[in-house]
Image (cartoon, rainbow, N blue to C red; front, side, top):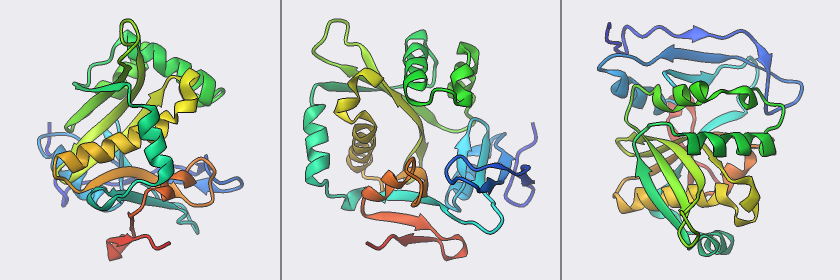
Length: 243
């Protein structure tokens, strides 16, 4: 397999599609494949320029006349949890965390399907088979892990959340996460982010990469709550998001 380098990487542009975040907008993506021995190096370089990984592809929005999707990362070492975040951590004190290799299991898939049926009914991912899920998890050309979250005090310690996470030289990148919809009152999505912040801090690293923040989208605006937050500003690099 031919190794990609920054000089030989070919970028491709998708056709325009309806934007999933902003009504009435169209989205296009710039993307390339990650492959070969230099995949991790290219992954880091492109991530530092606002790209995001999905399986063996890495992409960023390239929408005409719109730059609402902003790549963001939490400055983990400076993060100070608010009262709300401390309550979420306390409410999940009975969760045990285990970092696993990227090997799909039936247990994960069943939780994944329940999450999609409850939270994203009618979305394209709801039709994913076990093989599709396996491909999503295991088809990674870079260092990735699955972080499993289980209820410590119940029989058999049931699985309640999973995060597919890329391990970066300077932190962790949260690729995709899902959780038990029956325990939504625990704010599991928030807890997973807080746990990744703690993991990064404990490892002496710097950032938790959250993907794209869209200020005017109800689905994506929540990422602005994790301050201090840095936003990728193209040629200007990463800049602190002001209040």
